[in-house]
Length: 114
Image (tube, rainbow, N blue to C red; front, side, top):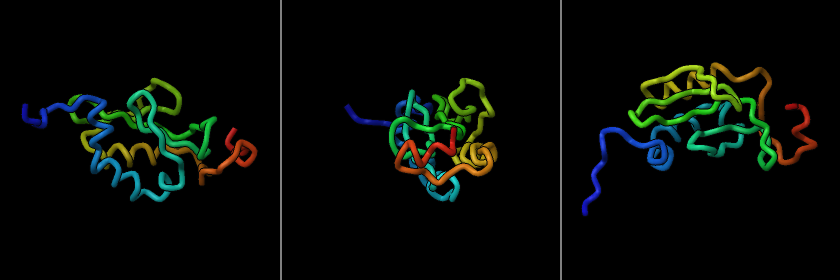
């Protein structure tokens, strides 16, 4: 059976085949300072490079229809839905708290984030 790209990706496919999404995140200096991880099909950013995560940045979730949903940190509250990965990254960056980053290795170093 051949593999064809479906018009609407599933959330799982959206994270595994995110192409331009990764480039957009890596090209943004503020996000590049944070530690990226996935949880529940969302791309999240932590100011700690190990568990327990310190999540104060918005998360980005690819939707089945190819759009992206940007959510408040550790919340189901939606900031906005965008048509492109670049727009989702820009929306997440616009909603970052002041003074966030860079990611640190330990809980003691990350105490400033609590």
